[in-house]
Amino acid sequence: MASKKPKSFPELFEFYYEDFKPLYGHVQSLNELPLGMLFEVNAAFDHLSRHWHYKQDEEEVVNSVSAHLKRGCFDVFKIVVRDTIDHYNELRRINTSIINNGDFDREMRQLVAEIRSGAITARQAEGDSRDKITWHKAYELWEPVYINCARFDKEYYLSEKVEWARRKQRWRIWRHRIEGVILGVLAGLIVWWLTSLGS
Image 1 (cartoon, helix red, strand yellow):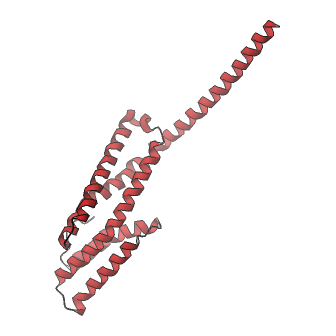
Image 2 (spheres, rainbow, N blue to C red):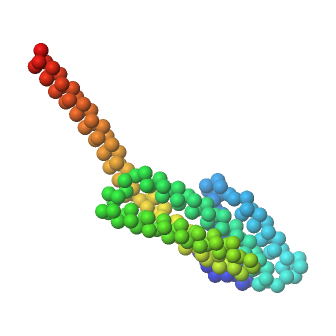
Image 3 (cartoon, rainbow, N blue to C red):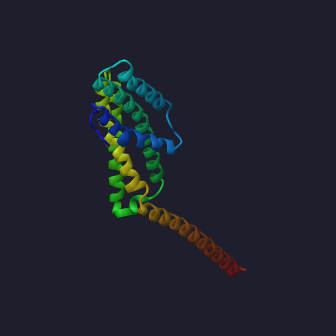
């Protein structure tokens, strides 16, 4: 992701192709395209046209366009964080403490705490964005949150170790059921044997 603030049309389109378009594709693949993102794209296009239609300065236009595109990205970042927290809650239903002697769980919790803390800070920075320059600062705060979410999916949610823990947990449940049935049968046999001795 390009964190710099674009100042020219080439830099603007580099931001568009490296940052905005992949994020747009991400939410589109989830079938969750936020309406606000479409409004921001429309506003960005309107600002872009002003360079030629009203002869506005390139840097001024680029600043306005990139601010709108970054605001559109904010919606995607929030969706990604929400999905990451959902995935984390899903993993909490599995006994992942057996992975790497508990290090997997500890490191996963630390990463989720970083994601939550970073998302809060970035969201607050959005609220402080009263001018076009601070939108870029808010965007820079969202970037590491997004990167950590991608890291969470790769290293934890999609980890082969999780599937191993899931299988182990299933086997433990079945083992307990089998042991329960065996104990029930044995108890029944003992009761039958004791009652047959008394008759």
